[in-house]
Structure formats: structure tokens, C-alpha cells
Length: 305
Image (tube, rainbow, N blue to C red; front, side, top):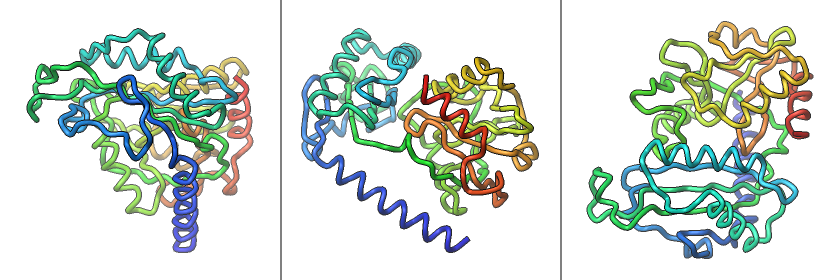
């Protein structure tokens, strides 16, 4: 356990330093202009900084193409409509800003973009939305990233924080307010894991703090019902490739008992695509630290979409 922890810390330190080296000279888009990383600033009165009031979206760039671009932009605008932010830009104009950022940074592959829209700068540091008088802020950060190609397995730990009911903070919103998930991640890190495994309000297995979660048992694929988690685009694509290739797949409730006895497990997300899970709550998943046969098959099918 201690050796694994030391190796993990060293790997993380090397990964962070490599990431910083590759991205120290990037240009960041803020409200129509591009700024060097060290000069990219937003007001301390911005509603995103003050209140976590905003919506974000992540996209992956592969071989000059934004993966599932239209679906990501649609989800961004659905979130903005849900929290009543009028960006005053069309979807095509947002895509144009994304492309402007890509061209300026001369990136064509192995890159990840984060689009962030907040309600904008407030006249006073209070909660009321109508205090944002000058309209929304749009920020685009584009960085070199090779996370989607990683073959490293991850460890999960179940935490007390849950993804809640939609009448509190709907987990289907990609909101800037991520404190619940951050607390879950802190809990998991303190237990020596990489990410948190979060339950739903009824105690069924739901998602991790940043990704969707799947298990494989007897050649069948299971993920949560989707009622209490972000219904991720990568999640949707994995379900799609399962159905297209006649792999049994189920969106249903299941418990930790089912998880602990799984043959394989993996998480999905835009940045990392599919990552296999090697340990959950101190229990080994699979027969080795390498991806299992279904993990390998599904990742290949997904990357070939």
C-alpha cells in the first residue's frame, strides 16, 4: 500500500510538471480577446468567482477534429438556458471562438478545451443574479493533454457525499459550483484513492466525483440508472457501442456488493475516454493492474467512433 502510494505520488508529480511545461505559453480566450496565460485574468467581481454561478463544458481535440462537438455545444446551451444565462452568441459563434483559440495555439491533436460561461461581473458581491449588469463572461482554455491515451488504472474509494436529488442541485448541470464533488475527491484522496465513488440518495452506486462509472460481470455491462448523475457524452457513446456490437448493457440500480464482485470496472469522461479501475475500497478489481478484455474492446470501439 505504502509503495503504491509513493509510486502514485511520483507519477503525479512528473505528470503535473510535464503538463505545466507543455502549457506554459498557451493563449486563453476571454470575451473576444486572447491573452497569454500569465496575463489571463477575470474580475474578482465575476459571478463565477463569487458564487460559482456558471456553466462549463469540456471538449477533446483529436487529429484536428473536436470530438462530438455538436453534442457538447448543445449541452452547454441547455445548461445556460436552465440557469437563465443569455450568452448573446449563437452556437456557431461559440464554435468560431473555440476554433480561433485552437488556431492561435497551433493545436491539432491531443488537446483539451474547457469552455466556461458565467453570469458576468457583478456590481456588488451578492447573490442576486440581476447584479450582473454587463452580460456573461466567456472563457476558453485550451491545453495539450494526452490523458485519453493513458493505460494507467485508477483506485476508487466510496465516500459519504452523494450526488443529490434534482430539486437541490441537479447533477445533470455542468455547473461551476462543484464543492460537493471536490469534498468527495478530498475524502477519497485521504483514503489513498485517486477518485471518489459516489452513491445516489438511495444508496445505489452512482458515479465518481468527475466521471461516469461502469462495471462488467459475466460479459454484461452495467452503469447507473442515470437519474442522479451527469449523463455524460462518453457514457452515452459507450452504451451506444455496446448496443451496436450486441454487448448486453444495462442502465439500472446496483449496489456495492455488485461492484466488489465485478470482473472489470471502468470510468468514462471526455478527457480520459475510458480508464480501467483496479481497486475499489481496498478490493482488487480484475486479475491484474492491466485493462481486462472487455475494457480493451470497449475502448477500441469508442476510439474508433
